[in-house]
Image 1 (tube, helix red, strand yellow):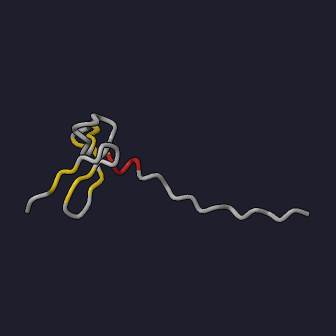
Image 2 (cartoon, one colour; image 1 turned 45 degrees about the vertical axis):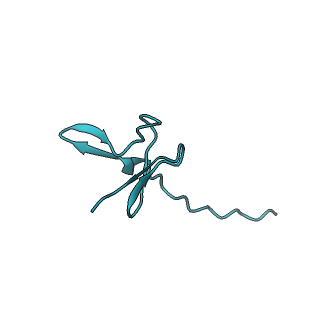
Image 3 (cartoon, rainbow, N blue to C red; image 1 turned 180 degrees about the vertical axis):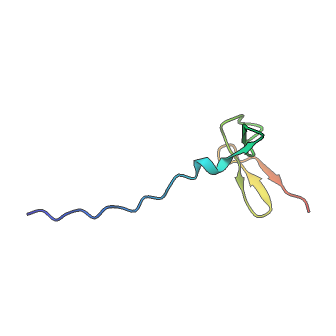
Length: 61
C-alpha cells in the first residue's frame, strides 16, 4: 500500500492586505508611479520599494 500524503499547510494570500475600505470605496495602497496601477510597492522600515523597476521612495521623519 502507498503511504498517505500529509496535507500541506498553506499560507493564506496577503493580496487583500493591499486594499482598504474608505467611505464605501475600495482604495489601493501605495502603487508604483513608474509601473502604474496594479504594481504595489513594498513597505520597508524607512522606504517604499518597487521590485519590478527598482524605484525607491524614502520616508522622511
